[in-house]
Image 1 (cartoon, helix red, strand yellow):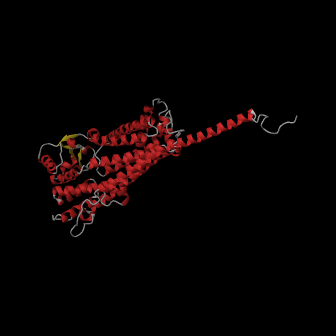
Image 2: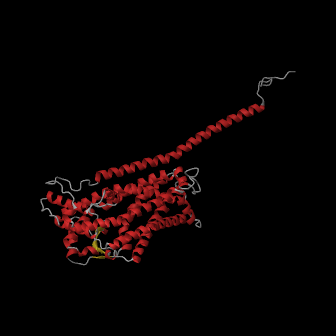
Image 3: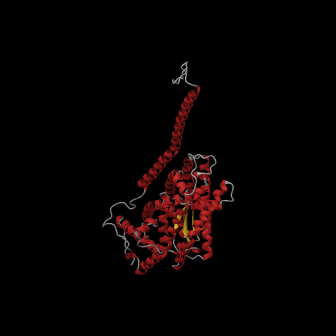
Length: 485
């Protein structure tokens, strides 16, 4: 009998081994299809929260841009100025000696300011965008078991390290202020203030980080939603409690004694329609010789606060500067700034989610990105406390990028408050003399360059404010203040 070459037996059925192989191949093919579908589905699920966070960030930033564009007083003194607007010129109102002193002070204080800024930014960027930050946090938290304690220790260690890195430049700047008579503090008192500042920074930073990392562990895919809402509320809360919790840490306050000045300041506030509970005096003279005043608090807690150094100025000048501060209160500038800032923080936290879940960025920071965004043990990716250095680096970068816009908007708002003071007092001559005294006593920069405007200038320069007062006088038919020289 010859052997058959046909794979089928006499009954026409394939051999059992071949049938098993075919079925195994079918199951493998089905498994590969299911795996591919599962992988595609998993990738889609992982993309969904990132897309949602990106859309939320775009919407929130667009809202902030729209609010700023529509509500910022880009022209604080609108209208036609008879004879044309006055050009700011320090030589009209400041003596050559005052101008020279301002330039000398600016040349002395700029090096520590710029060097401190560069050093602080460089240190946190190196820690955040290299494995050094993760290693540092791993080292200081090595003996800490509980995760919340790891976050607290890491926050304390990083804030202290950054403060120490900037301390030489702060000491340098303080020596310049002391040399020019602006600082009246002893070295020990100055160091105590630095420790207080560090303590306030540590408390706020620790609370924010504890809440954030709790959200990251609990909601690994959608923590940005809770973070955005929590960030908004935290900014509002800090703004409300700052005057009653933080300000007393650095200054002692007492009510201005009964007298003509107190009566007229309260009457001016009532005439302006700004409810004010009290007029307080801050003991600023134990720290500085500069002049200042501000309106603190909201609603029933609103108070006019005067530096005790300001009390030596003539009463009309004090009323002029308080009129400026009432302008902020009248327009609710602090509340407006708080809400706009809170919106910006919410958008920034949505963007932060995209960056903190980037595997490439996490690896660059020396952190294991994990196999999935919802790693169950919470020890990888954004949930790892060692990412705090990266987080602070991203926050620092964002803050520096936003500063020019914030300063530009702030200068316009301050100019509007100047216009309010002029409308309230209708005394441009006193306003000009007050701005001259502020500039000379505070040794303000009378001719800031473009970089200083971008990085530091939250208020118009003294000559700019004086020029606007002369514009106001022309527009309102009031005697134009002559040059003080």
